[in-house]
View 1: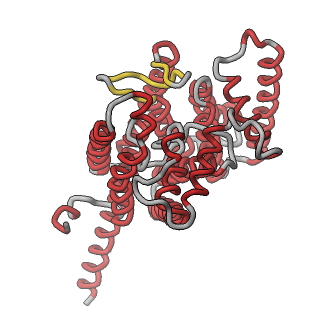
View 2: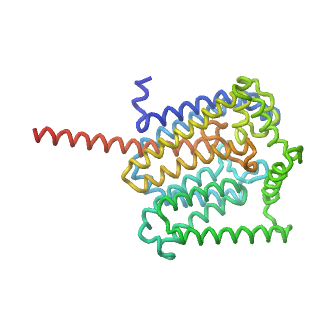
View 3: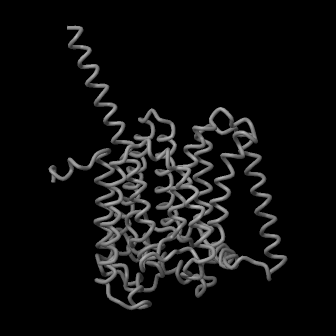
Length: 395
């Protein structure tokens, strides 16, 4: 094992956590796909094989990216951002519709969600802009608008078919602005303008039903159902079937779970292997394991933050912070949806849910973090060697 680990540079704990999660996902995906088998056909072995391909591809991407010098991420960030815009526009007009939303592009028979690529692209480009415009953030034309505009462009392009992802990415972006000490008065004015625009948007959608976005009623229904259920837990049982089954699965799991493959409610939870992964996990592995899983993601976040604070390059710090916040927020939303705290969304568990573009881009993100950590380790080793040689000369 030590022979193979020597090829993995960067933070050893992050490698261990990510490889452990991805390996464990093979077991859970095989166990959580009965509903997919019933709806689309095939067998658990078929979906396990498909997921294994994504896991291997994800690890290959992670390994390759972590060997790239960090300076190149800054250099290609603008190109990657414009490529993300092109992919999102292409998806709007030529995207493949799945579950009523045109979020996917079909590539060689496999579906790729362009918003997964756009999230990382925006974080890279925003990190570059925050460094480039650092001394111009008090100027609306020279600093504020050039930094804010890319956030709005990407989020609005994602918004049409993926509200939860747009809101999550918008929140992460504004967290980075806050970390970068963006002028709070301007930040407040921007947030106030956004709130007013949201009220106007909702008013227009309600006043002119014929011009509503295709997903507007879906968003509204999810919020209304969550509100009704909080007011009366017995209300709208049929409409809230997937959310109710997720909570029942968590209740059924108790402290130690039903055992691998013995969960019963996973067969009645849509996306039990992705959007409702945490509920299926608790049913079979128990609440105690759920706490361990949450703690694992927190450790991953802290290790990424450690790398962000260790690097002396501001672009790398912002990028690491954005990636770490994104991964933890995505996992947190999946957990909160399953326990009924937030409306149903399309956020799955990083490195654990059944593979796809989300898994690939999460692996690429970790590859970037490990590349930064690898560069930090090299600089530390060089500095230590230099200090040692200087001490020898002094003696």
